Amino acid sequence: MLTEQSGGEKTKMFDIRPRLMGGAGIALLMSMAAMPALAQNAWDAENFDLDVLIEAARSDPPLTVYDSTGKIVEIAEAFSQKYGLEATGVKVSTGGQIDQVMREGQSGNIVGSVVVIQDVPPGMAQLVPMGLMESWTPPDLAEFIPEEMQDPVIIVSSPNVWTYNTETYDSCPISNIWELTEEPWHRKVAMQDPLGKPTYTDWFNQMEMHFDEAIADAYQSHYGFALETEEESATKAWVKALAANAPLLTDSDSAAGDAVGARGQADPFVGLMATAKFRDNAPEGLALGLCEGVEPFSGWMYPGIGMISTQTASPNAARLFVRYLLTEEGISPQTIDGKFSSNSQVPAHPDEPSGVGDVLDQMMPYNTATAIDDFDTRQDWQDFWRMNYTR
Image (cartoon, rainbow, N blue to C red; front, side, top):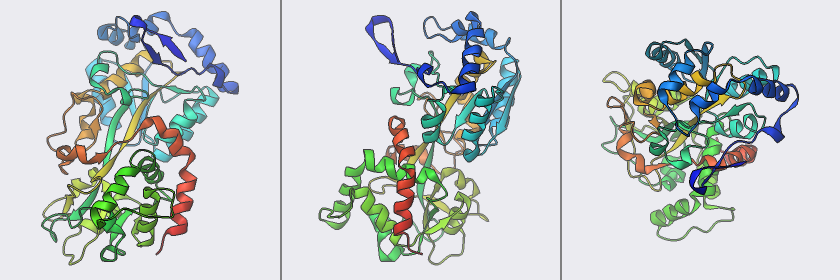
């Protein structure tokens, strides 16, 4: 649905009317009809007033927020203290978020008014078309958030980076991702299993859709001649070659980080993991270093999007919470792990241990515009990996 704005500009909004489903749709329409006009006005873009939103939020029932990180508990507590209202943060696993929201929406028993969705493709492919969730970008912060990060609004982006052992190597032992497909790194690459971590297949699909030329250019840079392949894309050729080189597949970033960063190794792995694992760096802990200058990317970003229940009884408080997450104060418990706000005014956390803030231009971004394509191709990429993986 397109809505007309001043100056003739049009902005995209979620039109849920043709997609309402059964009892969930009826409950949604009833809740929308009962929503007071004051609440709606409190968050409208035109003449937005933060003080009015805060006052309206204080009249809302207590708020519950879901996220896959336990840090949502302390964030909700700080939010409550700041604004004088009641909010509870609940950790819900990434894999369980979608099912939880769907069950609540279909029953009409809404608990989670705000959800920071860490598994973006099914969120976009299922929750939005069902009319259960919607996105809202704070009007007073919109100018600081890139347009491509507003629909849906990205709360944080999490870097996953190529990593090496700093005790063994003075610098990263690779400079190009195609090196990881060669004999010296046979059985020496640690990463999470794409069959159990769908964000990895999303990464593959994003590479193919948006950065395939960069993958081909990296091949030519490394070998000195153009890539010739029977595969449909340079990305598929690289994924196939990586799988055939028998990487160590783990069930967590912790396991990958241990394989790479454990001290006392003569010939350690290189690996791919979230920057949060760098918290384990210490003289008696791990020795993880971020690989800089790897062609075409030293890592990739994965977003967490902020969504609001269309059936929430606390629409003002929900929007106020989303805005809080988009401030330095609100998101700092997560930026210390190397995550980055979509709000350009929020700096990298000064105590973040990996140093990824200095190489953000080397990270492959995530394009939410094609998130549904990522969802639709997950099984295809998993099958492709399964067919080519060698133990």
